[in-house]
Image (cartoon, rainbow, N blue to C red):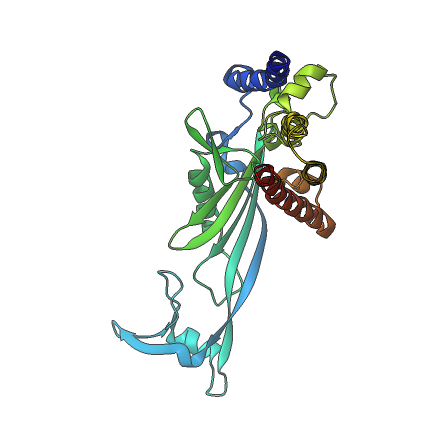
Length: 330
C-alpha cells in the first residue's frame, strides 16, 4: 500500500517540477519587454496641464529686513530649503494697508506625458516654493523636462504592482520619485511592447500589455505555468489544497482503525470544515492587486468576509484536529 502512496506522490509532484523548469527557462524564452528610460526623447515630453494649488499666507508671518540697502520681507515659514521673499514693492502690492491680513500664493503643478511605440510616461511635479503670481515660465518647463529625462534614463519601466523588481541585475520600476530642493513629484511609466510567443507563461506577464487576440495554447503547458504561485490567477493554492486533502484522507483512513467512534466522528467533522474553509479561500483568492487594478474594482465586503470566515474556520479546525490527536492517547 505504501508503494502506491509513493507513486501517487511522485505523480502529484511532476507538475511542480515542470513549473520550476519553466521558471528556470525564463531568461531564454521570455522577451525583454521592459521600457528603457534611455530610449526617451526629451523633446517629445509634452506639457499637458498646469494647475495651481492655493496657499493662504499671513501678514504677521513676514519679517522685515534690509539687505544691501534694499528692504525685503521674508516669510517665516520655510518651504523645504526655499524661502518666500518679497520686495518692498511686492509686499505693498499684496498687503496695501493694515486691514489686509492675508493674501493668496500658489504652488505650481506641472503635468507631463510621453508616448512612444515602446512605452509611455506620466509625470507630475510641484514647486516647493509658492509664487505670488498665477503664471509659469517656459524656462521652468524646459528644466522639468530635463529633470524627467535625467530621473528616467537609467530606469527600466513596467506596470508592476510592487515598488521594484530586477532584470539581469538591473532595477525595474513603475514609479520614480522626484525630490529636489526646488520641486517634488512622481513619474510613472509602463511598457507598450507586445508579448512574444512564450511570455504569457511567466509570473510577470501581467506587468506588460496582454495579447489582443487570444491564441490556442497547449492545455498541459497552461496548467503547469499557472501553478506558479506568483502568477496572476494562479491555481497554486487549489493544487496545494488537493495534496493536503490527499494526506488527510490517508491519515483519516489510518486513524479510523485506532480511534473511538466519537473521536472518529469529530475528526470527520473537523476535516470537512477544514476542506470547506480552504475551498472558500480558493474560490475567493482573486484578491490580488493586478486583478482589481485591471478590472477597476475594489475588494468587496462580502469578498473580505468570505476570506476571513475561511481563515477562521481553518484555525478552528487545526485546534480541533490537535484535540482529536490528543484524544487518541486518552
